[in-house]
Picture 1 (tube, each protein chain N blue to C red):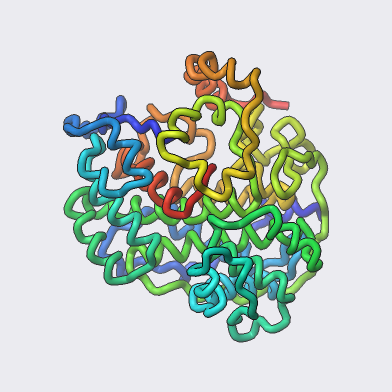
Picture 2: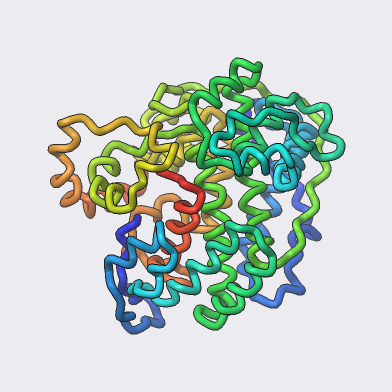
Length: 161
Length: 265
């Protein structure tokens, strides 16, 4: 999920946007350092991050200020969608950390480099996830290659029982 | 009546709630619809809490933001070194203190929750089932409130609770999957819970996290489909978002909010 594509073009989108110049490394770095959004390849990353931080901080004036900038960048409908996504993840983090769930084993194996890059082990909830066993570590390269298959399996319609 | 059957009962939706007619931004119709459904379910008796208790717990979500004890703990190097009593919402005095503690900590300091803290709640008399239902209530209210705060709207008034008793039905298929609470894995979601994960052969832990109270999982999916993406679309990064912002833009928001909350998962 963290390895976001820098391309804003979506294959079937009716309104593709041109690629935004930037540094792919910044797409990851902005997760921990909002200032890195300025170098991101994701269009309007600066405004999206600023708004996200404001929603987290709950300062109404800051929310209003960043929302105005966001609307200029992504439009009125984009503001609504952004508010909804930010709200959703204010919820999701509490589900994950409130229930103390471990990171799923395949994701744990596939994400080691990214987690190290972002120093996610600093988070208290990292204690809920045991280190992967040797088998899973060895399987990690294969799991990364199998990710498209995993996606297709996840999209598979369930059999009627 | 099995608790899962009640999920599919017709809901008495309040069409006057979540009225965005005066909004300066166009609000997709699925958003107020999802909010109204969530509010209607909030007011109903759940599996382990009555409707009145559920609405009172929801009020504590809002009270937590003004709680002096929570503010002091948030600033402290360790929240466990600060004792005191929480500033409660008016009318919620009948809630057990341990439930109020759970709500307030989930709201104000989720990044520093620990297994030791959870076990302390259990030692103080809160069951895992009642705790999970609290997580469901807190997270529903948090997200709907955050949506309003993000757009500068007033918070919606909490619903009037419905009468009735909790079903107190523990679902089948629970396993220890390494979390604080037991969960239903995808291959054990059968019978009344066969719909829980859309019939998929596997599911991520975050979707199974609240399955000790299956209605919380259903609520997660219903609200998530409007606020984010349908569960089955989450792993497909190449799928068009169907929103005014692209999938990469969505994930920038998701990742930054998650990191600021110090969410490892």
